[in-house]
Length: 227
Image 1 (tube, rainbow, N blue to C red):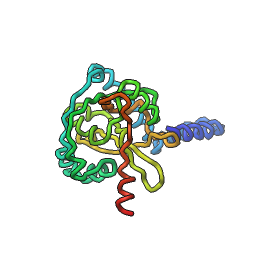
Image 2: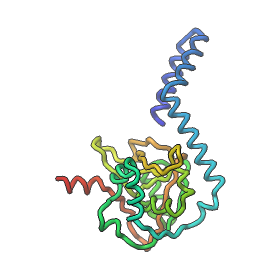
Image 3: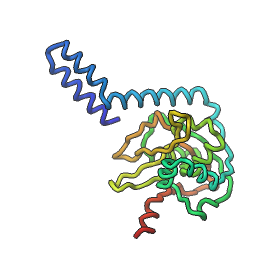
Image 4: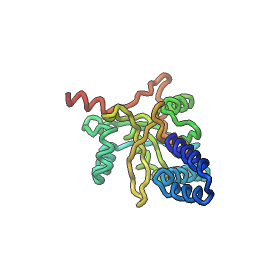
């Protein structure tokens, strides 16, 4: 993360400016106990975990998966967890007409090491004949393939604008208890807070050539309804 790099560089200058070698060691030890270092360690551990999962399951990333979604079931599953339902509602419509949408789709998980901007990710999906998945499609995919719950699976096809003006994409993953958890991360140019080396992305095969990759923005719909 950019914030950690700045923190690390400032720390290096502080240590360099300290002439006493024993005090240098003390400064470093204290720094390693800070929240900044803890977040960095967790990020590194998750990155290594993601790489290992990919290396051990390469065949699973070469396959295409046919999904017959049941979005009512998906919404019902979410309703059992208050926080998950609350977060999901920011990114997907819970309206009856939207949940009754039918039709199978072909999905494929991707791992783009070194690419972390959402527009670049969408371009990579486009090259291979896919569009970015929306949250309800990611959830339907995981319902049918629960082994992918173990990774950070990002829905680039859904976003939410918060009051600060920043937009975020949902991330589906497994929590420490092994249960499904929905969070969100920032993947646009001026707000890269997530590393692509730790995240996976779901693509939905385009049904016809030239099909647009429209991003679902539920927050804009909610603003119109509440105005």
